[in-house]
Length: 261
Length: 246
Image 1: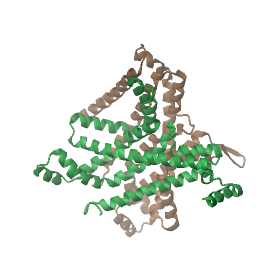
Image 2 (image 1 turned 180 degrees about the vertical axis):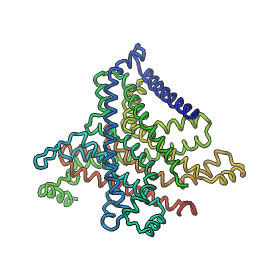
Image 3 (image 1 turned 120 degrees about the vertical axis):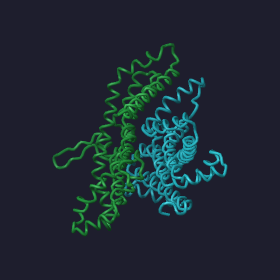
Image 4 (image 1 turned 90 degrees about the vertical axis):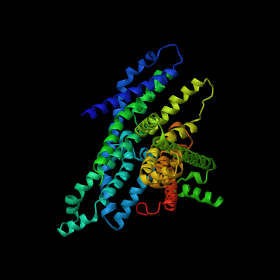
């Protein structure tokens, strides 16, 4: 209990320090006679908008994670438990999407997916944010596929043989014996993939999705005040840190907890 | 050379597959300049981040309490914030501030230099972690043996621990550096004329986004494939005998 309170105190102190550093840097930048309070006062008015932009980032990352995980799981199983052409196809797909730069894949989706697709009478529109989600889901798919592979091969082959001796077929073995053990080991690296994804999410601003960075730019051009540059980008860094650091911490905690002894 | 460009020109006129970088000298220049800057960004930030990683690992091993706290705070901040926003923060906020603080009329660092600084700091944080786990993997008996030979802590680190730790942490390092090379595309955002930027200039002029995208993906796959192969060779050559699976 005491430990937890101690940790909370430390986190608060860290954020306090971050805010003080950003303010100090912007104070150093403020060349006019006004104090820094007057300098950053306009920021308050934009705060809800910036937070909304940040929520767009979070939403996009969660959607991309869900889609990427669904497909990545299928490919991951394909490249581990199958043989022949399926295995080679899944392996190639995984390696390709793991090694291609995120921004290039994003550009690929933004430029090459049409505005809308017409299937018979349905018109399915593809607004930029949806293309952004697809563009981020592709590399996530490759990374999740590797996580699944790692989790599956970490289970000793004796488990497969024992299940075989119990006359379970391949799918029963996977469902009853392997997955319950493997899922636990996949969880920490899966969370690390999410941490990598949320770091990459602001890239969608480059390809024209309106997220926190776009909002920050609009705020800066609306105010036209160079003294705000530091606080606005600093605020974005603090927001992302506040969101990512606990996730990374939890992943590390689970990694230690589920480690093979 | 003439026949090659003629071939690609026919490919465009007959099949509409426009690989203009192979027959248009202006586009070819844009693309080769892109390759040059991507290579520059990658090489500079790979070496910079390795250097930073070694210094950080040394400070965590032998620095005082303050240095250790500082290094771990640095790792926390740079690992848990998006590299794109770090880049914007450096280029748009810190750059102008530093310039006005020093009272110069010209910006201190160009956009290329800021991209290198930002990428180096970003990847350095990850490299420190990898080196630290390598340092921790060096057997305590080895360090004690160095101690009993009368080596100072700095000597122990430089002559005993670092060579071993470097070899142990090569696989993790490989992963980080591949990531770093992929992240150099972020420099597009501050108009560094690297590969992606050059390609985008070509496709906004010639409207051949699909073709350029395919070329880009092939080039990046090749570069990263080459890099992983090279690292694999180094890894095999430097593997510690009897360590792990080797």
